[in-house]
Image (cartoon, rainbow, N blue to C red; front, side, top):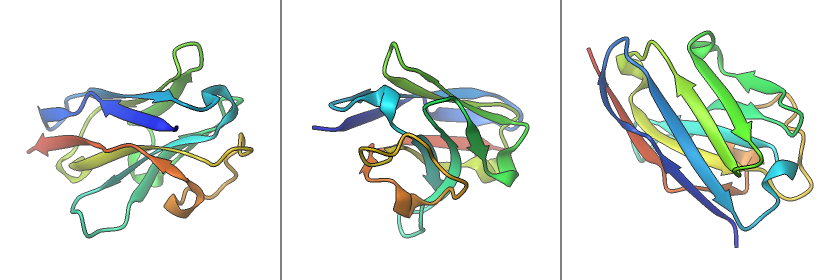
Length: 128
């Protein structure tokens, strides 16, 4: 059974940093494209933030380029999102996601519809 558990969220001030972690289990983590998504309200669609494939190739959404870094530690079955110089518009619930089995490469599109498994999310709040 696929399980994704996010941690590391919190409340910070504008310009500060946070590192999110996602502990994965129940599937071969090293063989899956993984991603981070976010949304500000429960009714919004999830916005793609970053994704990383099995070779470490990443796709980062334009609004966070230069500030956010996605990485993975296959030995620990853990996905990370390093977030620097946080802005109030980065506030939201952040979700870890895994592509379906057989999808080790992410492709160019960073869309929620390509991901099959989701964590419960971790809240990030950035004050101005």
